[in-house]
Image 1 (cartoon, rainbow, N blue to C red):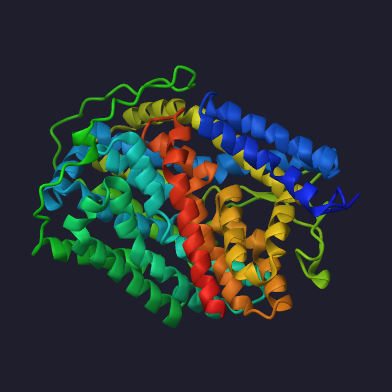
Image 2 (image 1 turned 45 degrees about the vertical axis):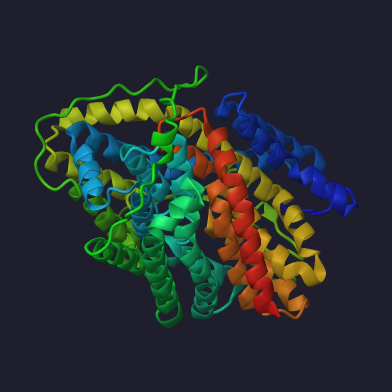
Length: 549
């Protein structure tokens, strides 16, 4: 029997909104407090979401538990698959000694921690986001920052903060192309509008992360690097999005940003006497949470004295991810094997209704678990890891042993990701997410501001700018047309505002914790970035409000 969502089950919008928010409050509250295991917080949040779906929104039990199973499966594949294989590659580079050589080279090129932060987290992370997304940029850059000497919690927070400017055009433009499909709007016009909003913040983010890391005094010595990085990234982002389309925006902007910074460092270096926070007040080594399911990683000695360029594994990874992200290549790989399985009890059993969708567009929601194991980003990362492993001198047996050890180390985080994605799916299919969205949509003249925050809320809940666009893209179009606003403005604002929620979504925080080996301390990471997320989202809202006038 097909079930239609009800966005006001109590007949009082304020009460329905308050009840819909309970699972989010439970999850974020427990994670922020940090008094229980993070996987337990995720499971309690999931249980709360199921209770709200079943007893408040009257969702059929088969659909509720089916949505939880669907979300958990998606959490393990493709997201967990990406995390596992990124950490496998990282572990190989550490064991071979090449990560230490990379750290030495980066230190020689940019000995100042502030410049390293801009180069690695912002420029290189933006390039990786353009090809991969799904947590890969955060995992890679957080691990690199920690190896460069950043304290683990700071490395995680800075990687999350930097991974904002490229997200709206990440993964070969998928968030924008998906938004066009959902709304029926022209993809190039959406790309142009997003390309007029986001570059403002792409220019701002390098300055923001330096201040967040070391304060205003830290910025005074490296503002030229922040200006060159932000200016080059933002300029290319604007030009490519407005005159080419959304597909290669971050790839082109990231490469240009890296090249611009390297060129700048040939003629300029910071001259101030500035002390990094880790040296002024060293953080203690990250203690393994006594309640964590992960054992402390044992340091592995280098196999042999290392030779060869230590950038090769990462350049290989970037090349494979770029290749995997090309639509024609992805389509060909899907042709090899990409079976889809309908989720029992959920597939075509739930219908979204007006005003979230137009009446003529209301149809049962599909719930197909696509096991595209060949074309999946994680599979490309695994291939890059294997090729890099042979290049670094590992035998097949050594790589298998390293892979098994990596899987054991991240097993607790994989459970956490699965539980959190299950929670997000239950919230989505029960209609609780739309109830929260409609509360923001009912703000009338203030809608340009709060509509932008709707995108932020969508990413904070789902962990994906693409998913947020699927979730609220139709609502943004309908509401903006009813209010006489430009639908392109508000649909693009959903995607651009959403990028500021990326740093606080549970999935990204767990990925950062895995990369920096502080599983169990995700609450500290959340507290470090939450205020920045709110402030930046509000600034996007103000910009969109000004553009709407």
